[in-house]
Length: 182
Image 1 (spheres, rainbow, N blue to C red):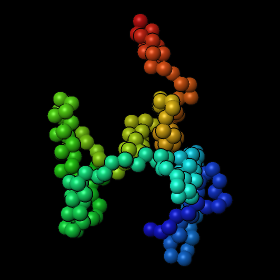
Image 2 (cartoon, rainbow, N blue to C red):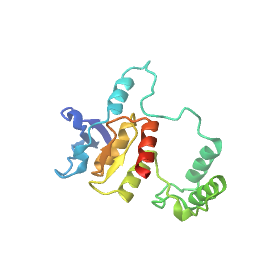
Image 3 (cartoon, rainbow, N blue to C red):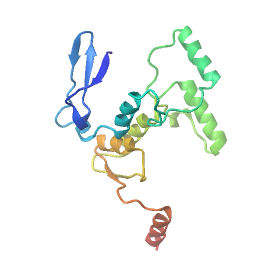
Image 4 (spheres, helix red, strand yellow):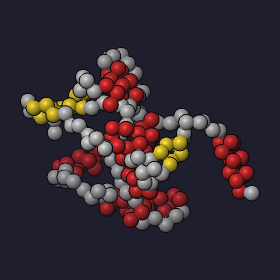
């Protein structure tokens, strides 16, 4: 599409400018957009600082610390050579979903079909989809504390209420559950 830069006046809201050719656009969310409720990620602020320091060790965004498996690299290269570079099903490639279902069935002992599997392009996308599929505005979700801040951001964007401000140990939660059973 174009190059994205942090708008100098954006502040904590993190509005972005988009440069297409020589034209700069500033997409502004609608006044009712839940995107306005989501603050700029502190992780992105740290990442910007780390990118400015060539000697920094990058621990800010959870990049994998292992090589991509050779069969995955070869499959991606083969798909590119064969011209399979366009959009796929929004739920993932059928063959991949079938392979995942087969693996879940074998490992978990629970019958799983490709219809039970959705492949997303990342964990945050999957979490956002799950929030919006099973929760509605005003519903509550309990997130661990400490947590990855983007989990709360995904919930906030879906107008879901996040409960996690009071840290609880697992033993406190267990005793509460036992007490509530009787």
